[in-house]
Length: 196
Image (tube, rainbow, N blue to C red; front, top):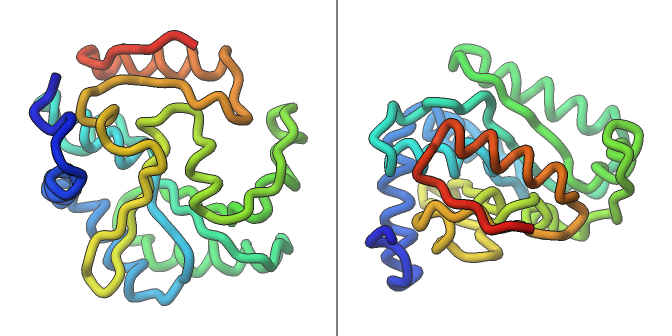
C-alpha cells in the first residue's frame, strides 16, 4: 500500500498536484485551457492516472500516454458547435507535440452507439460523464481555475495511489474492462486488478 492511501483528501490532493506538475505537457495544456475561457471542462482519464503510475513506477513521467483527453459540457449539442471548439483548441496546442482528444460530453450519446454498439444515456454534466469512465482510476479530471488545481474524483483518490484497478459497472462491459486492465498491467506491472 502506498503512503498516500487512507490519508486525508487534502494530503492526497497536494501529492496529486505535486506529481502532475512534473508532467510539463499536461501543465502547459492546463495553462492554455485556463486562459482560453472554456467553461465546464476537465483534462482527464489516462493522462492523469498514467502520470501518477509513471511517477510511482519510477518511469519517465509521460511514458505510455498516447493522448490528452479534454472533456467539457455544452448544452449546444450540434456537431458544428463541438467542431468549432475542437479546431480552436487544437490550434492552441499545435506547438506542444501532443495529441488531444476533445469531446463535448453532452453529445456523446448521439454517436456512441454507432461507434461502439452500446447505448448511452445522455450525461447530465461533465462530472456525470467522468463518473462513468470504466475504472475508478480513470474517473479523474483536473483543470486550473485562476492557476489553482480543481479535481473531480467521484470515487476518491485511494485507488490511483494504491494502483488498484476497480471496475465502474456503469455503461461499461466486462470485456472492455478486462482488456483495458490487462493492457495497463503490461505497461505498469505494480497495478493490481479487482475482478469484475
